[in-house]
Amino acid sequence: MPAFQGVDYFNADELLSEEERLVRNTVREFVEDSVLPVIEKHNRAGTFPRDIVQKMAELGVFGATLPTTYGCAGLNNVSYGLMMQELERGDSSIRSFASVQSALVMFPIYTFGSEEQKDKWLPLLASGKAIGSFGLTEPDYGSNPGGMITRAVRKDGGFVLNGAKMWITNGTIADVSVVWAKLDGVVHGFLVEKGTKGFSAPEMKGKHSLRASVTSELVFEDCWIPEENIFPNGKGLKAPLMCLSQARYGIAWGALGAAMGCYDVALNYAKSRIQFDKPIASFQLVQEKLVYMLTEITKGQLLCIQLGRLKDQHKVKFTHISMAKRNNVYHALEIARIARDILGANGILDEYPIMRHMANLESVKTYEGTHDIHTLIIGEDITGIAAYA
Image (cartoon, rainbow, N blue to C red; front, side, top):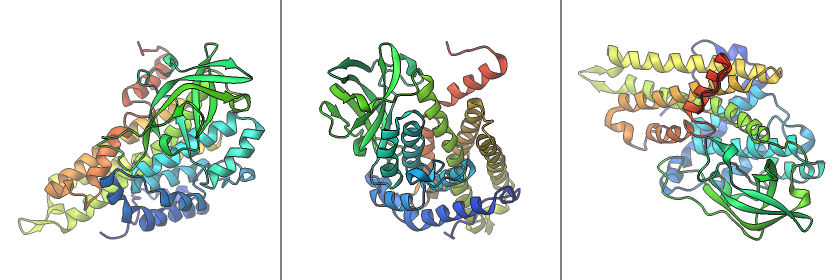
């Protein structure tokens, strides 16, 4: 397959600064050189390509929008979004790793942590010398995180933690986990370090999706957490939900990358695949499919660029992010399915990325807020009526 040239039907590049294009092109090249050549092997084996973590760190991917004081890149949100777009064109698992490290670990440490916590962990996480995970979802509480049963109680100048988290990206390999638990009935954030007595993080196996990602349980059995490992700021459920908004922002961009990858493969295939003595791209039904794919990618690009501008201007609402995540993931999954259809039987082969993207996007559609939950978030915003129950 030819090298990826990008998808830009509406000259959206003209809406980007020179620096933003440079950031995107740099990560695009990294994906071409370091992700695509190995990702199918890791997807088959169900393993995460650890050796690319350092390369991503060198590109400034981790905590890209945080200050340079902590070894971060200090980029704007559009640049960060473009990074996530390109990483997910490689694989949702790679973007998920970067999203968790940046939005769900570094962001809460920076936003809710003490100066000592920031000074200790942010440079390590930015450099890839430490890996983080985020523990909010529980076996019985996904869409309703406020129902969590993980508890912390004060004891011996610290806290004792009991409970379990599930579907945790990076959990098994993490050096530190941001864990949310109820203390005196109020949600608090804790930093649980690898090797803490009573803490285990078994890897979840048997996935048909996000196979190149480490997905884990987090189990806490009388874990003693020192006082200095509780976040001094950000009490209540609003704090972890703020983190989810950061992650959902990256997902909205990332889904575009997967969609672009599928569209690019389908277009090139349709122009070269000969049936009835001519390329299948010459048939009306195939052209209609390609037009749908390109139109939805273009709409998603414009949505994300404006979303990023609003975020950089501190004008973004979490409902804006919900709309972008909901829309872009939904259409990315449809685009993957249509691309599989265009490729016919070849679409199921891992010579092409289509089925891998499709399987991954099935998870992306339901994590960080399901499609239906985002529908209700937006519905409440425009009607003033909550319809969750």
